[in-house]
Image (tube, rainbow, N blue to C red; front, top):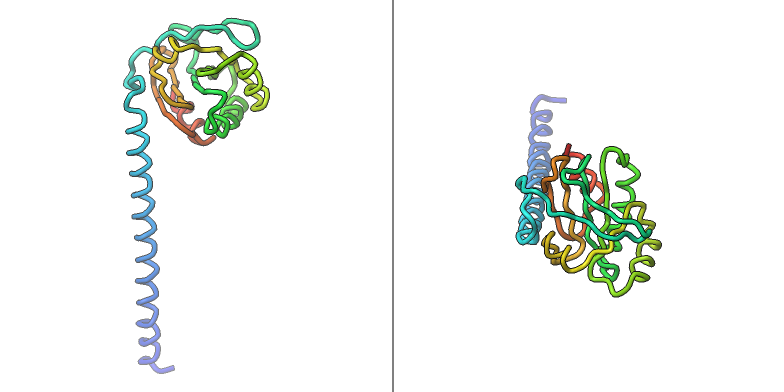
Amino acid sequence: MRPGKLAGMENASEPARRSRLHKLVSMLANAVLFVAIVYGVTTFQSRNMLDSDGEPAPPLLGPTLDGGFYQLGAPPARPAVVYFFAPWCKVCALSSGNLVRLRRWRDADDLDIVAVALAWSDEAEVETYAAKHQLNMPVVLGDPAVARRWQVYAFPSYYVVDSDGRVARRDIGYSSQLGLWWRAWAVD
């Protein structure tokens, strides 16, 4: 092969490299845009929730489905994920499995997980939901006063309370298994 032909082959691959680089930059820009949009929507949705800047969490106490009584310690002995749901909520139904798997991943000695039913018509409705979704955590029968104290206006709503009893994280809407794990993992 003559040197001129080899040089021509190298130049022919230059447009292909530029095209691959352009595609990579475009994909990266789209990913950054997607993350920015998701962050903006999430921030907008959670604007009316309790602040997650270290403010003390409100009290959480009430009867549970199993006939007991739940009280989130003040401060709690360990961090807690407080999951507010409505039995009729389709998004809650989609995310309940992620909460159940979080319970399997995180030992009860390290993390409290409590589900709080709101906007329910009767206890049987909550029992059916809990059984269908195999909730393996205390299920508190909440009321409008609990919803007001915790500023829950949409379902599902999540709060992560640190071991000092302060709101560390908050979110509204569907949360993936990884998202729940990440929120709970990053709190002591």
